[in-house]
Image (tube, rainbow, N blue to C red; front, side, top):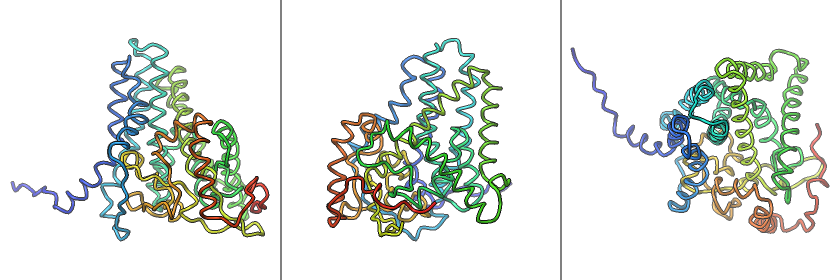
Length: 383
């Protein structure tokens, strides 16, 4: 019997080695299992690693200012794409496996169980929703379907409609609920965006159907798929873990949504596209999103912090997102782990970010001398 040659070509090894840092997120899965089995102080590992360890690594490793080749092919990006695909079953097995295991784990107190699922929510929000964001931007049905599964696991399926149909079109304008206004603290932003983003997402889908002379009740409305998936996961949690398991699932959901909206808050805080009159705004440019080139947190978040390029060229996969210099895009002083912590304390956030917003205004729009309620004074785009 002849053995097949399974040696990986040198070029493929090079691609794999370059992609491996972006696989660090999978290391959070064993930490979740360790915390469930051991309990005690190990339960703190998930938030400690995602928030503090990667902040420390950012400080040590510094910035990555290099840009990938924009001519990279799909085969060049295989190992990068694979991590987003592998994460979906990994997260599902982790979340629902622990929903089955934890309610019957006698060594875990009620506090430890809730704290553990707080940590699970940190990773399903920080990693899971972020990976769904990458997948939903792709054209093929498999990746979009996987994005829907990840979002349904945190009961936030409408994020796909809101993000693709509303946020990318209206970012940095009054029409976008997710753009945080200058001086708007996170604790005011959060309840506002929960309410408005659901409404705007549903309306965007209903308006698309209306243009086809179809009612919102038409089965092609993706909200029916959203509701079915979310209902299925709620029932699964109840079957596997009983009422206790359902509560733990909802703890995970709440933390994941909070993590997502913290990131949404910092990505465009205080930035505004220039109003051109008649409800029209200038085209989206790199300067309308905050950029962060911090190496370690970009590994964890698959280059989400290169957000300036993502909004400028939304169809680019994460390995080829470009970094921008300070003269081309506004820069965050730290990576997302530090910035999300700062956003929870509005006085610290304003002290850190408001001067940067004012410098951004002076740099890009010196002709606008009165920024008081600028968005409110500009005529919103017609609904």
